Length: 106
Image 1 (cartoon, rainbow, N blue to C red):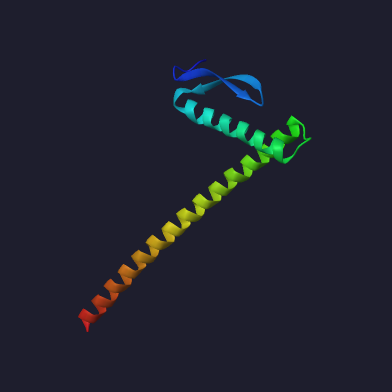
Image 2 (tube, helix red, strand yellow):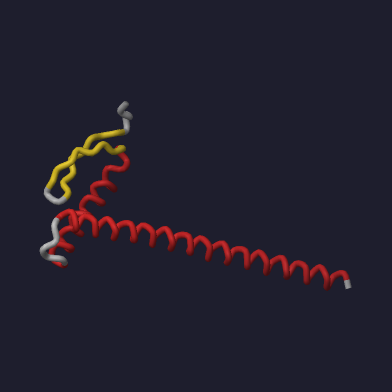
């Protein structure tokens, strides 16, 4: 069943056309990714002359997977660094408050 937010778009990857159903809000992203794949195909074609399209697409798939994994890892590291910083800040405030309370009780 078609969602009212879905559209069919035509994409060209490696000089082949594909009709793809996407949600309207994802159309621009899908087109950008298609453009990026085609750019990588051109880059890899000149970098690895003599390779057939299947080899090139396999290498591009590996490159994309590595990029995705790197981005996820970097996001997790940033999140962990942010949380560590906030927890350290809270710990410092609590320590100061405890020291202030101990000084007042003496």
